[in-house]
Image 1 (cartoon, helix red, strand yellow):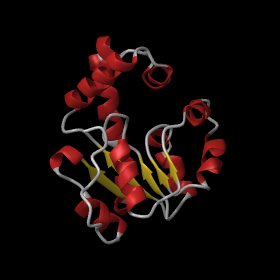
Image 2: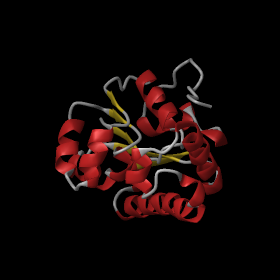
Image 3: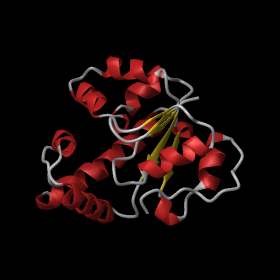
Image 4: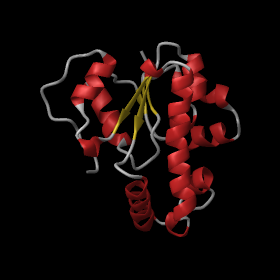
Length: 177
């Protein structure tokens, strides 16, 4: 089974990736700038061809390819990571941007390299992404989607129930808490 983390950056995607590895999904593929470029160019099939070698995905480009991955991998499951509120997500995005400076990935994803002047647009982007994911799975197969927010104490229970596996003994990994 493949598990795609389809939350936007700054929603606990690294925690999800680490948790999936602990659960035995060892073939991990996280953020990949080259694959994001290909996806944004519409070369989805090339990106999905690379996905064949992995079983655990998070961050970009995977957040944007859930519809194609849903069709290509009929046994795949999808996990939408979220923040407690859109403004908390935006503040985290801005904090990260201040630390790292202008970023080509943000330019490609949001249309600007620094989010601080684009609060309304970015919050709308975040909200639209969540709603679009929900709508897609509601129209197709909602049993293949799990929504989680690590700050709401979601963790092993939700993840393991969804993936039908045993909960590990160790604490849930909150990476970059």
